[in-house]
Image 1: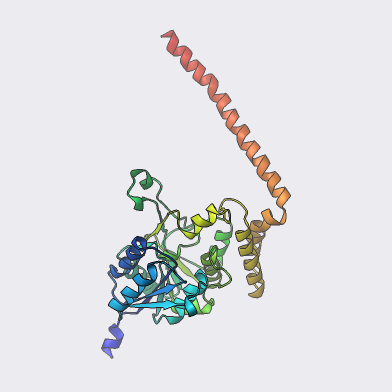
Image 2: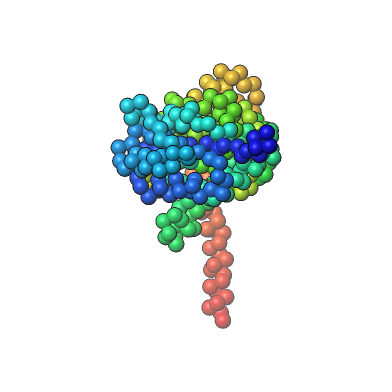
Length: 328
């Protein structure tokens, strides 16, 4: 009996990958092996890779059969990020679930520290912090200046009740958590129905975290235990390069996500007026495209005029300064 009481809870680490390459993939896997908390399992879920990453995953699974498992879709299909995360979750056995993509890393105390928070916060269904957007992995001095943390939008070390986070996400006052940042209770993932498989790539994580923020209390911590690698081959950068995604401008992927969210809120019979107001505001650029474009045009003109006025005001000051210098 005492042995059962003292047993550490199992954490299932779900790592999806698609043509992850070698260097980043191995670094991601090794960051799990470097955890100070040792009762974890690693599920490597292959989304139909055709490079060396499949062989790398198999090697780890064969070398560490008690810790690592290799998973793939039937006939080695490519089914998208959401379906592949769900594949890993279905085969996991842990009381807690953590996510790590194949090009990101965890710091060594990630699982230990976040597990302690959830054990101390029984009401919290998930914990996350401000992920470091990691440019400095290159080792270039100029990239060190580009690193920044994702916006939390609330006071850290706080338990946030639903649906506050959903509203903050819609209003762009907080960033949704990075997948590598979260630790979740298993029942949470089950209760919200896992990841939405209609989202193969863009917004797949946001659809999941919006569901979580609608249904469950979330603890937002002050520490950062993960690094979200920024590089040109990531799914976000590739989508931007192909013109499929622009986070600062209205785009078809964002509209599809908002329409899905609208239908989801209807389905769940959400009555919160502030949530609907925030959603309608987010949909405004799409529902009233001409008015939005006109407002953007006038905003651009206004900013240009303000800039010119500031320059005009500064000009006499500069001239006076030069005159004083010439008098000396």
